[in-house]
Length: 191
Ligand code: B4P
Image 1: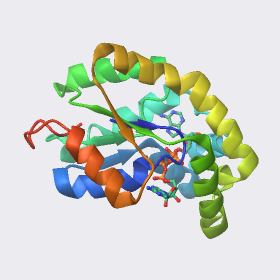
Image 2: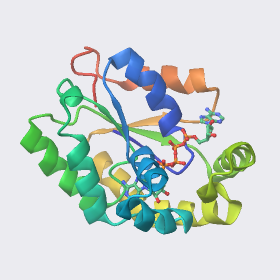
Image 3: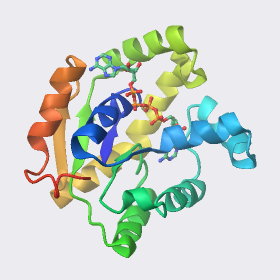
């Protein structure tokens, strides 16, 4: 599991890691953006929530994740990016992984201070125009992270599953730090 505030680089790092670990990258943000693009009823609902900087409901997210995890390509593990973001999601994930017989190997937290996040998302907003990167929305997303996702980070810290990684530096530097904290054997390194 990759966890971290909005724009901390979860998606960027997961794209590299999937080649190293040879497992799929499952991003709940990407799954939602596909639903929005496809204009499905779920996508229409999710769009407004995402553009406001809030989180899509736990119930909807679990349905989306369960559907994705029934695909054949996850049998040897997967990188989960952007889930769980709330304590009920962390609970649901534990139960889901138990049913799938795929225990969590590592939770990697990318730590990036808010000033860097504001700068990164400002650049992406200019380049891609993603509505939730609008500066006011980013501030809202940072608040939502502090209120709803920081407790999830604490939960994994208390469980001894959390690997903290400094997410400031070049993409390559951050990537090397992640590899350094992952379990040694490649079979055990999928999270
Ligand atoms: P996400 O898609 O997860 O969006 P994110 O937090 O912005 O992405 P990430 O941390 O992956 O940053 P990235 O690598 O792109 O979520 C979007 C929305 O979907 C949420 O706000 C929510 O509404 C909804 N959602 C998703 N999952 C949910 C869930 N489980 N429950 C409820 N709702 C959910 O990097 C950001 C930028 O920084 C990029 O432009 C990148 O190029 C740059 N960058 C990356 N690494 C860098 C580095 N080392 N140095 C400089 N720049 C860097």
